[in-house]
Length: 214
Ligand code: FE
Image (cartoon, rainbow, N blue to C red; front, side, top):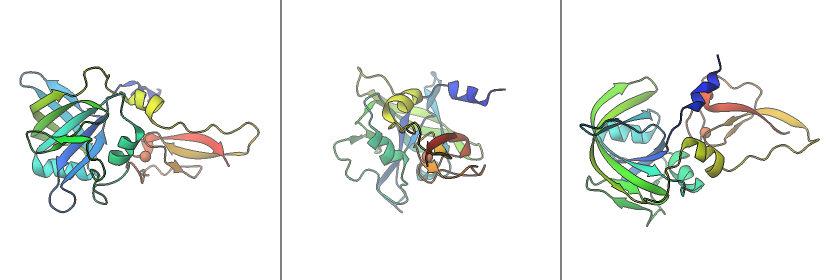
């Protein structure tokens, strides 16, 4: 059995946005790779969202969200802005003027580095333990950039995420664990199985063992 088979599944990448609940910023968003169309008649999509994300709670409370489809023009800063910090600490839309618009449902969608957005209204939820699966009716949608392909997860890994320097020949190396999502380094020979990335909140299964310069 080769567990890396799971990485052969292909995914898109999306900014999931929701309206604030009055305790923090007016709007919030996070990065997800789990938006898919599940039925065409009626038009419904599903998203799976980690419960650790503040956006998860907002979608749960509000029942509405937007999914902005990240394109190959998306830059790493957009991933850092929405993926590597929490809406419980910062206003993710601060300093992002001109890079988003408001849709008919009153929620924001991202226009920078995206090629479409879809508005959803939650019709069902399924508790999956670490995540909630939301099934939503599509209430609105539009194409923002018809010429740029959507960014796949593989495209992100190969072209958007900054490359880690390989250790120079002859240099002393050590083993560490690197988050495959954001690049965070856990310094240690063994990664605790319940470890959660402090930057992007992904679990131990998203870490890989690498050799870096000591
Ligand atoms: Fe991470």
